[in-house]
Image (cartoon, rainbow, N blue to C red; front, side, top):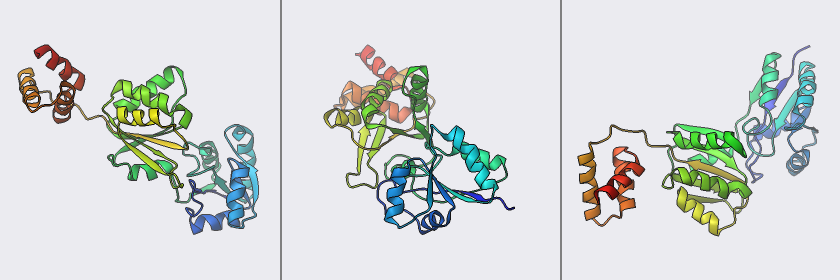
Length: 276
């Protein structure tokens, strides 16, 4: 008997029109659809008059359901995997099932479609390539602290997902590392209240201090500027004097010199204060 096929089917982030004809066909033809939330997926299927059998597959039952799905696939069935929204296995259930299918010699076909991280990146105004995707960051403890430090050490644009009730805390912790780093929060992508908040981490945090965060949030942080050979201290002094003479504040001068030279902004700030 021929083995079946596992199809990874991306689903709309919010706007039900954001689904491909090919995904709709696979959902219609599949023997079963493995869904992260069957209630949510049923609304999508109902909208497109699709009546394929739904089974539950999520983070809390994947250990039990993965072997069962593999058995169906080995028996020749076509299984479509969907998450609540976007691409399965990307910060959503599916990675373990894909690996198991490959280990059993089962074909895995990924269909193109919506993904919040890439959608937000293209409209962020930050450098698009290269970028690093971190999924969801740890909630607490040393792992969280290490992850936030790693994000801010990246020279690539970093993308991660955050729940609205945790957004302020995360932005505050990132701001404490580098308040001037550029960042973007994209929320409710493709939905009626889609919004992009752009600015420094300090400015973005200030916005969400005044405005209650709501909806699904994708956070993007600009990459750290690679350290360039540092100018001699006398040259840094000269640059600082030039900026101050033009009316820049100490903070503004330090920021501009750091941007132009790659030197540490905090070190330049202290250097200016010492010189004063």
